[in-house]
Length: 159
Image (cartoon, rainbow, N blue to C red):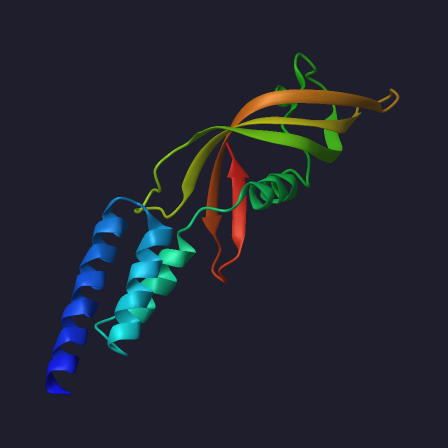
């Protein structure tokens, strides 16, 4: 029994160290699995349970989640610069048809966000004073920051 406890502790330490290596490489999904393994070998091992939850919170969103986040981020309209040479009025009723990930940057540990460069395609109603509403399609390369809010939910902002 004594030797088994010692072996379990060594295995837990091995998984914990491997998890820390994955964290340094920003391989958060693998890190979470390794922290979980350390916790399974020795319940309460260091802060493995907390670290596993933290690592899981840093795993980037799926493509479907990303598209939903982009759609939510443009709920109040898009900048007129997205609409190619149309510089009057304001946009409303924006619908994002597709996004394409052009580049995903490294996780910014200091400000805790994922940087993305996305090719965003959609349609919006353009409201112009004293004129009829126009439907405008757009395709634009936009930089987004994807982060978790204070309650753990995903948020997106564009720049």
